[in-house]
Length: 234
Picture 1: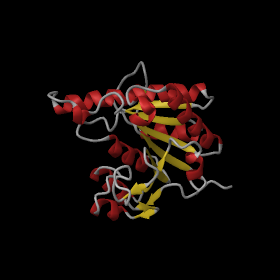
Picture 2: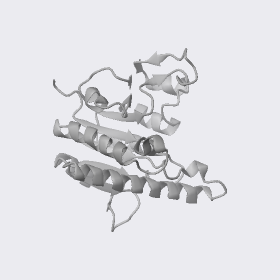
Picture 3: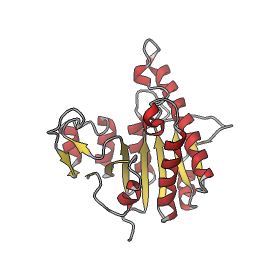
């Protein structure tokens, strides 16, 4: 089957790497995630990844900590996850490179768009850590920016649910499941797919978004092959 997307940007939350433990990095979940990424890489897909840090620290839950400081702490959490994901990919035999928007020379290379594009064209999976590098922005916004910067065919949002719903399907059995939406649908209906800034960037840059459940093994390849396993937003 011919692949539908040649270059993708995957947004993986920190919680997705924590698994049922909800804190830290779950080895089994990390290995399964790396396996799915390697599978699409081996199929010829160029892969960029923005990773969150909620399994360690979220800026918005910093309590009495100064807001910018809390956000910087959250950025460091994404670098921790980036290091773990890079290591898991390399261990699986998949070439990978961690680039960060904040300078940590002994651990990762600083982000530069042209260099990231070079790595993608060389066949490396590029993991982007550190968010946008500025406080007051989420990793959703970082994902939208990086997707636009690398010219991704689609921004893949790996979620804990299998699609976008009109309400939380865990608490509302009548929640409507959507297979396709527009950018304005998610903005006007406040569907909680991503924050408003990220959604606006995707709309302005015409970056398609696909929401799916990464935890379901094989789903990532199904998305790449164009199978309907989630919600397409365009």
